[in-house]
Amino acid sequence: MAVLAECRRVLTDGGRLGVVSLLKTDHPNWIVRLYEWLHAHLPTYVDCRPIDAHTMIEQTGFYIMNQQMRSMWGLPVEMVTARKIL
Image (cartoon, rainbow, N blue to C red):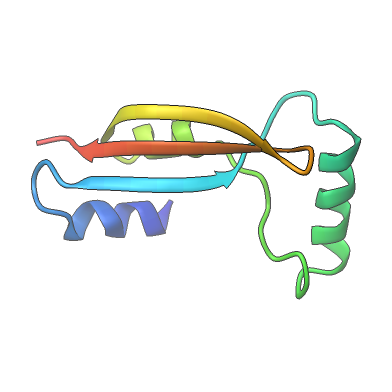
């Protein structure tokens, strides 16, 4: 959340933010569980982890403008665009 707070600090009023991330879900499928295992054991090679970007962005003081869910090789991906609240 420190990165989002810094983005909020440097953006002008009404400035926009775009985030694409692996999506943290309540019931991960086998490919997500494998990916998280690889991240835990080989973080040099699998260096990111699924997060709940939508909630984190809202909690940092942004207004969500658009949110889309996609799948990339069976991994859930979330794309969020948000605007800095004035």
